[in-house]
Amino acid sequence: MAGTITITEVTYTSVRKVTLEWTSDASGNADATTTKAFTGEVVRAVQLPDSGGTQPTDLYDVTVTDSDGADVLHGLGANLSNAATTQKAQKDGLGAVAASKLTLNVSNAGSGKGGKAIVYLRSFIAPVGRRNKR
Image 1 (cartoon, rainbow, N blue to C red):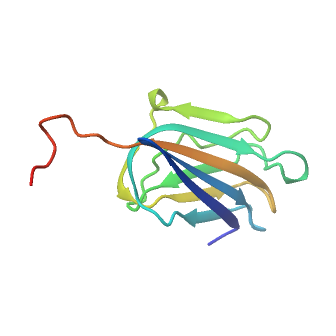
Image 2: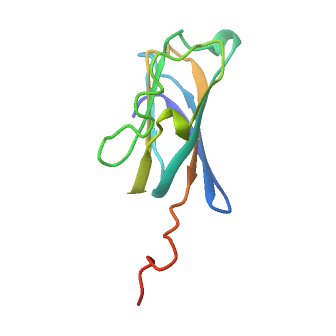
């Protein structure tokens, strides 16, 4: 594991908010995996770079991978601005996750830099008549 990451997971009805606050190591990297597994559509992803002395290097990269190693951001966390919040919505092509822990991977951020990645997931709801019957 590189750098340090604090993970906060909150559920609001059918939406889960996973906040990953990160600080990069000397190589400019940070990574960590959630303790809980998630299932749902990624409906919003927000990247918030720190400012001042801990502002990351411009064009830093963020991926959020599932247990299969697939980026649920579908590459939308590449080459991020260090001076502005980046927000992506489901319409931009965000992915989904099924019964998987999520791993945040930050690279090219610079030594001791920081930011926050927030992922909003909406639970899958089976249509009426399609739910598993016991």
